[in-house]
Image 1 (cartoon, rainbow, N blue to C red):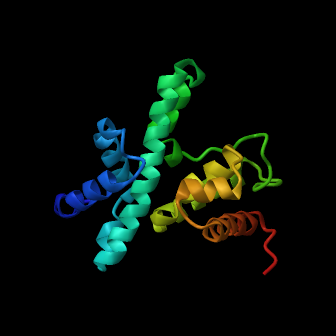
Image 2: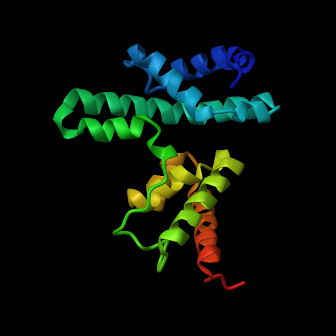
Length: 184
């Protein structure tokens, strides 16, 4: 988001954060919540012209960011030994920007050799670059690395279960096409 856009929406973002009911009692996290909102928004605000839609989208992102940030803090305060430092660092340093193929999970990639796996990875990354708002890499990691349910994925991505399922079908269609198992 460029400086003009950031300045343009900064007051609105802060206003929405402070109005969120879960923010009360967590005022010390304003900077962290704001930074998380900016990260999650990416450049999407540049593509939206309707101010009502912008506010609605910001409200959804703020809700998710407040919940996530407060949850992270409570986990750190209550049980610091429960979260290994390398796992926390992995998630906070672009974990969802990395694409990994777990060896034990063959659901998406049945009978895929190393060459096909590399091609699949590059296609998923290309798809993610083409449609960043669909968060394909994050979706892949949530479903096939972390084995999260459709409900958990839709909550994490802040989309409906139908939208999450549609995106999963897009990934499955891509894998089938690359492996030569496409029906059409």
